[in-house]
Image (tube, one colour):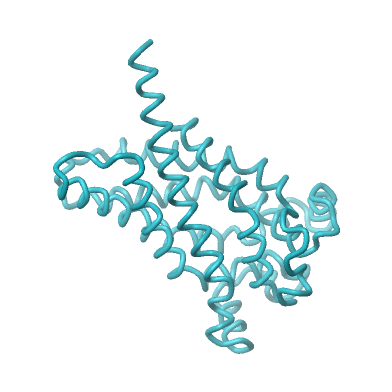
Length: 265
């Protein structure tokens, strides 16, 4: 799980990075063009690259461990609950790694002229360690509903497809289910993503920087309405659908390869 999750995570993050940059700039308070428009689309990529492997691996180790720990009969109606709990636990742990790399990455994306390491040292100098964890609550609040929609949907789509064709789904079928589940979950949770971006990008000492998700959402709604709450929904949906396709497909593929190797040795 560690290796499979890590490999899957890194490949997704790097391939889809430009879409993520566009999304961040669409959501940023200064607006798309001032945040850099289509220029320097790989700004912040070192931070994503460093955080990606440990973040994905932490998620999957926790996800598989909790699923194993809560062992239920596979026909049990508690199955989706088990997947939800496992995914939520995975997110809480993974966010310990994800949030610092996300804060640095998003700030680099909206100020493409600054270097990633410079942004990292600035945050530490101005805000200390808690500066790197700004937006932890809002990230967890975005990830848990996301996982609660995506993972049970992914598992049920796979189960339905297996049942329809009378044998277990192939890697590509698992990936198609992953893309659909991810895209749907992405759209539903976009307002929470906007709040998280605003909190991470807010100026030190501003009211948004305090990390209150509800007041941030209210502020966006008041100033920009529905369009503001769903800023960046298309690049987010596209990135996460493609990401779900590559990530969950690559995860299943790598995992079965490793299991084969394990049997062979």
